[in-house]
Image 1 (cartoon, one colour):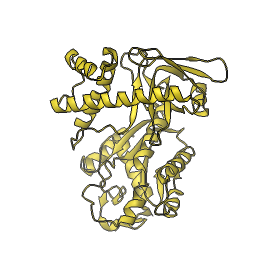
Image 2: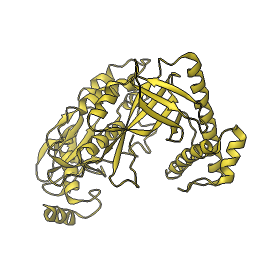
Image 3: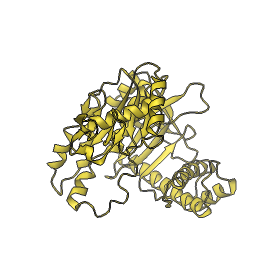
Image 4: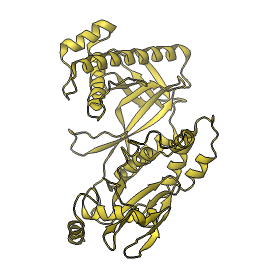
Length: 374
């Protein structure tokens, strides 16, 4: 999770560390669970209200709307204002999508600001005390133990924020997300531009020769039809693969923009292949890359994947006959190499030229931009 503070003199980045409240006694756990469910119902009420009004503005809700939610659910004005703010953010995000659908809050999670909670060190068998201080939240102290992930974030120069997230997951386990703030490093001005091409079978191929994620496809093929937690396992494999990636000499990473790559593909693949293809977590991989690049001061840019695997950067021509399977062989000039590596180098070309895609400008303009940037 990331959030930039516009009011801060130095741009900050945020990371969250989840801690499950397994040691919470039964009475406190029930109070927290009821509070989370109440916040979920209030936010869904505000979502329905804002969606009916088609109000997706960035302004805070008016006082009459806040009082309407306060009186309906018997909560404080401050809590109603905070939940209305979170609900409006969901509505605004949904209105910016191509297919505008009313949000349905499936997760039971609430963000609590410093008005409602404080996080302090705790003496004893626990490491921190998350204190709910009222203003609509139940007054109680929730002791939590630190985790390896949280300790690593703090050791890298982060500090605990005044905001937390409280909720329950799909298995109804209660958790608290502690947020760690850290100044964002400046973007690199020296280094090379690298492109990354993704492939369901061959993993992630970079134009500098690095290849990761080759073990993902065999793992997906070995999954049984009714096997559970397969997506979580693939996430773990991808996370381990990205740790082997060397980005020290890179200043810009160009990746494919595959947001609508599955559009108009209904009925073209079998059900079995679609189930396996759903494990190719490209969006999750890019999210991890965004975090890694942000921490290392690397600029990440999305590029149009159109014809990147069929375009020859030597003769400046593209032809659908250039690619056969995993092999690229230009029918015009005879250049030959692995198709994914060729696509990655074409993405590198787009990154150096500063254009979105191969069809953004004619080839002559593309190469003149490349020469001027070099």
